[in-house]
Image (tube, rainbow, N blue to C red; front, side):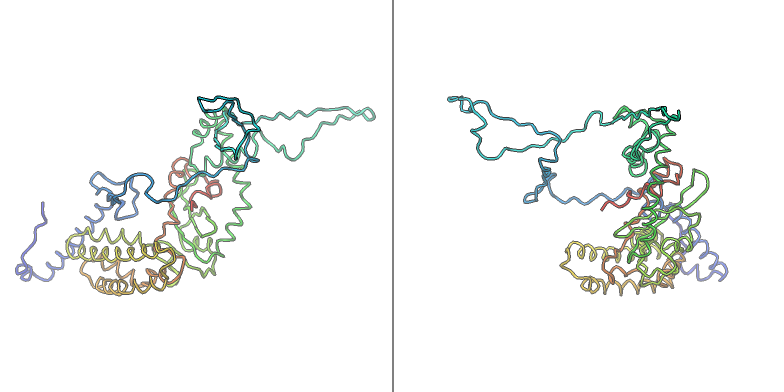
Length: 433
């Protein structure tokens, strides 16, 4: 059913109070429709929450290329490791001449050229080494005191060695397996039977072992010239609500749990005097940053513009214009990235100049827009318009905050019920480049 509308002449004849009330109802209706239509395309909602009515994800454009390696591409061949590093060398010598009319026997001294090499990688069926330590006791023939043998420092305490502890911690923290899944993996692949409690103890042991490195990462973060930050809710132990913060730089990645999501929690990570560039979303925790040193995430902006474009009336038209300008921004950015250094940052800035001018005008018009949602968004963006373009001013800054996207660790939140030890053992889970 289409929304009914009153002719303009009838609206003009209505009392002012009625017209104001109609305007309020139309605005309220647009806001409610926008809220109902929120999905992973136009908001921060995860794709798993999308209703059946949500639009499908846009299909990837076909390149027109055939599957597999393209003509002229560089072949990727596994490099052979040095002979001295392999576990075993097997030599295969010909015994007879391959000429069916000859068939004469061959000897190693008849060798010509170098051997053709092929290396086969295989997993040992049972790579586990079980070492038993026996501590004998002896009685002193002089004083009668009994002394028992002491192990060297390499033995350590407990039943599991450092390599196994590291493997379990990696399976739990990096590869997001539950403790029960780890128990199953250890038994099915290597025949090692461990309890759930042992898995938890090994993760705790790994966390403690990484404490010193973790502290070094914390100290390094405020020294980094560029940082990407994000945060997500995290119920510690499945009960008390905390926030998992992530700070990503070129050198290190830090995960940190905090009870707050405010600017004080942000400053605990970067320090009170941090003067580098921060890339993030527009959450109020980062509002104290200078616009010239704060890159807003365009991926979040595009979601907002898409949500506006789905509104009825003038608000939708404004959203479409904003989306078109965003598309042009990323066209220029992709050209800059794909040039592999041939296009300078100054050339990118110049190419973005006309787009930035048009965007400023669109935001200016939006501040006086009749759609309250558009007006509110433009008022927010105009306050720190420079935060949209830091990536065109500072080398190494990107227009999105994808580097700090915390979504990859969210499955870990579900399978561990908010395990606090993981802020150390999931250190490598985002840094894949």
